[in-house]
Length: 597
View 1 (cartoon, one colour):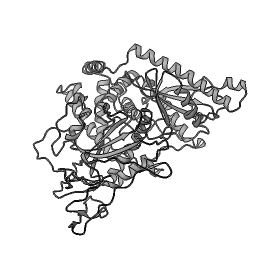
View 2 (cartoon, one colour):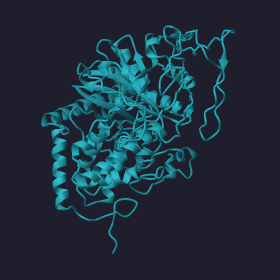
View 3 (cartoon, one colour):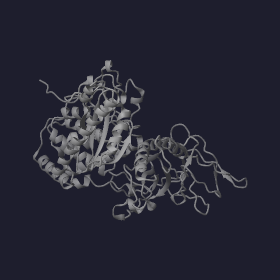
View 4 (cartoon, one colour):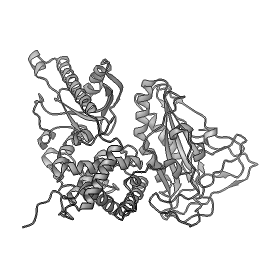
């Protein structure tokens, strides 16, 4: 008789652990403990207190909304809202200082506007609440804040129920009857979390493995859905899939098999924990790459295991997938070395040297006039960055590796501002071009500036500044202890490869957004990259233009004025293997006119 299995396919191996696996798992657990990844008892108690306080707040809120809408006193007393946890806290893999993902479920008369206006106002009045930041325009609308010092991400689901019962079961598909897409997406996190815990064969082994993989992803700078990498739910689904394939393995073996399988996975073949379910009567779109063109274009589909099935990794781009593939291969190589006793766990978790891996960066500064405006502005700009990165990759015909740093940096000497970084280099798979190679970034940067300034809550003083900086010019406060790392050579090898004696490859020159002009008016040339359209950091000038409607507009870079006596040369088109790019405008051989963004 065939053995039952939890996933959509039969498990790859049912073998149990060896003595070596037991020893390595003990070493792994000790490493994770020493790294401070487990919360203290005091932390657990504090989180329970926070959830209890938040439950009181949302119940008071729903009654106020019910009363304001003219319902009678009895109905006001019966009105109810309920909270559910999901994410790392619900899975049991959260660490000290981690946020709590919470879903608030309300009845049909409490709208999303009530949530983002009235509940926000209530939270504003609570002394224990700090750093309140609503993001109503996000793909999954969220309210971010700190309550009693603990970070909370609060979602809202408006159900088609007159009263929300205290014993509500949101795992049933019927809960999705007559709800909008935003509510369906908000419910998805909690429903997915519960289903994952039902689909893994051994919860404790799953938790240890997931804690390990999450820590590795953060150390290697590939943990962030916002920046085009994988978020928490995607990493969870990948680990759950490995646990299904090796149901009797211990965490040390599961980690090794994780890297072995994901390093050789044939994307865009989807990762699924179970067969997908469709309920046509509920009317929600289910992920299906054969029926939906948009789904078929996604590069790294990792599918949620509940109705309606969604791709948790739709933000992944060709560049970020390339970065993650290199990291998966590196992890696989190190795990093989550990099996041969030639490496230790600490090698796997070495911090990724982001600023040592690139010579050239785009630096995006977000600035506001006060702390409240800055929280709003920073969150909005960060949520739009992925679009910017994808536009750059598209306009350079995917010849340029675009690697966002998944986070931001703040300078204590410049309040109400932060800096995002984007590493740039020519892809190593391309044949080096000995001539000058130009990538025009003016379009993506102008579109991005216009995009962020459509923010509905924009206020005077909210600005962004984009500049091109070299490794040696990265601000000192970015580095731990203020110690600047050694800048890379012209060619940066993949993170997993071993040193080679091969000669360094000249990565060519890449022009992008506005001409880099020195204070003397000479063309600023960078060995390896030349960004046409991006100001060099030392020449960056800030700008902000407010239109007659009160909304800000950012003017396009001024076209270069070409005096008649100057000699002008045409740029040769880039050979990129597909259609030739459109002809660029003439470029000056000598530059005497300084240009600013």
